[in-house]
Amino acid sequence: AELQILSDKCVKCLQCINVCPCNAIKNDKNVVYIDNTCTLCGICIPKCSFSAISYNENFTKSKFNIDEYNGILIFGEQRDGKVSSVVYELLGEGNRLARQLGTKVSVVLLGNNTDKVVRELFAFGADDVFQIDHPLLECFNDELYTDIVVQVILQSKPEIFLVGATTYGRSLAARVASRLNTGLTADCTCLEIDAEKRLLKQTRPAFSGNLMATIICPNHRPQMCTVRSKVMNPIEPDFSKIGQIIKPNVTISPNLKIKKIDSIKNKVQRVNLADADIIVSAGRGIQKPQNLELIREFADCLGAAVGSSRALVDAGWIEYSHQIGQTGINVRPKIYFACGISGAIQHLAGMMSAKYIIAINKDPNAPIFKVANLGMVGEIEHIIPALIKEVKNKKA
Ligand code: FAD
Image (cartoon, rainbow, N blue to C red; front, side):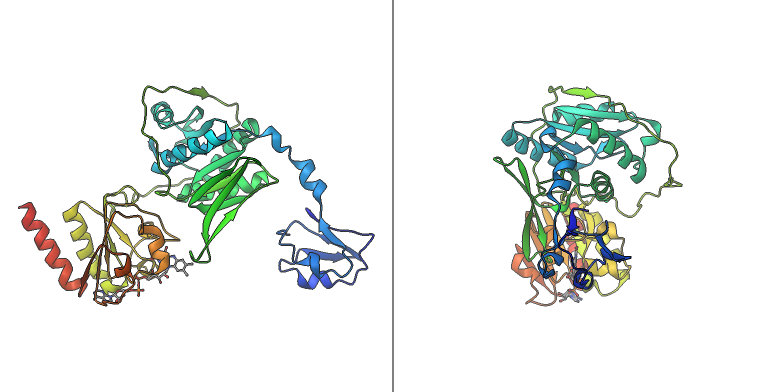
């Protein structure tokens, strides 16, 4: 392990076994050792009265030659030939970071018949695209995608690998990081470069958004993070731009433990939440699940998508894909209606960058009014039908 027990100093007092929160220190037939469940928290080091525990610097240094790694790689998530909007945002951000590092931006694109997608990736800032086209890659498969992305990374050796914090991206990034024995910072909201050390400074909210933590990965490569959608900016596309298409030599194994049996499209959500210009979001203040119909009707009148607070998802009234906030998705619509939502910090984290926030709540002191551009104090059951009537009248 990267932490080691120094046998010449260890007196086998076994104090360390009790202090390890991960039960990673073992005593087997009077041999004390640290196994691979160690998370490198380092709690044991100062607790050892005999200075018998230390970081094994050689382990880290011998494993990676950091200088071999160069360039920024982005996971080109797409579904049915439509690139996820977060990829364009990552390309914009990747270009900004690449300029500081004096390097280039590549995309790894997995799918079937993705030639059209490649053109778009170049237009939005990719210098190279690693294109892997195969019928087995038609749909995302955690196992197969991980396997191929790992092969591409081992061949191309990027110093940074960026992935969108989508359902697929989160699953993929965790598996890839684990396979490559590198670090992963999830759900970043800000990325910066320490140009001198060529380190990626990865910032993400911690402790329910009360603290911003900046995390680095100094000893392993690639430096990996998932990035929330709607926090970075894409560049203006230039469809005359052409880059290099690379067809890497990878093994695509059909022997998979994970097999797709069926896919069911969400029929309720007519407008994609992440890309919506108007969002009508419902919270516990709608009182009963039947009132979601009222919210949907209002959203339909406006051509809006339906969002929700976590309270409704936890209550089982609406699917998780609608949840906005720290543990849901980030949105940046032009208009955001918060209907019966109190305005907890975890919800605000996902919708604060909306251009115009309209809050409807019966409590005039609800925290949501502090961030709202327009507030309506009253009962959802009265205000929403009145708004529906008004919008319908305007349209007629
Ligand atoms: P409540 O806080 O119960 O608020 C209901 C509001 O409705 C109140 O303000 C009330 O005055 C109003 N109201 C009641 N009746 C009416 C009526 N008839 N008409 C009008 N108004 C009415 N939450 C999220 O939303 N997204 C997240 O991603 C998220 N992640 C979290 C992660 C962590 C680690 C934790 C600890 C919490 C997270 N939460 C998240 C939960 C969050 O803290 C709040 O509990 C949640 O947002 C509350 O949802 P709400 O506003 O719908 O419900």
